[in-house]
Length: 124
Image (cartoon, rainbow, N blue to C red; front, side):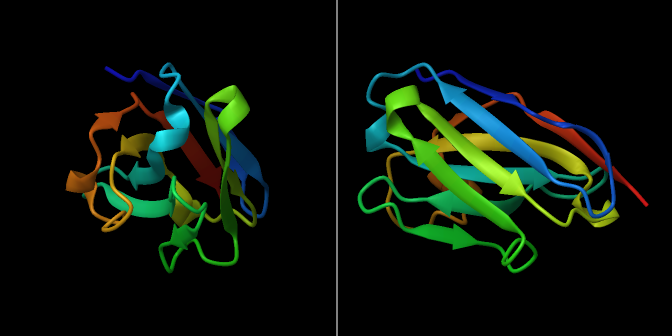
């Protein structure tokens, strides 16, 4: 069982930046692909970004391209989501997730383990 703990959320203004972190409990962290998803009130949980364990390739939702960057530090068992130029529509609970897969990483069901989420609120 992998435990994932997100941190770094908060209340910011439009145009600001935040860096989310997700710490994993498993020593085999480097064998998981990692993803970030978000869920706004009344909406489905949606894909934001992912990073493949095998080659470090990254993938982004269109809404995140050019503004968000996913990265990982295997020595620290941590994945990050750097979010720049935040918009009010980025307001959501952000979740990190771990997957054994290297494909279909934009799909929720590809992920085996999920964190509890961290709230990001962007005011206009």
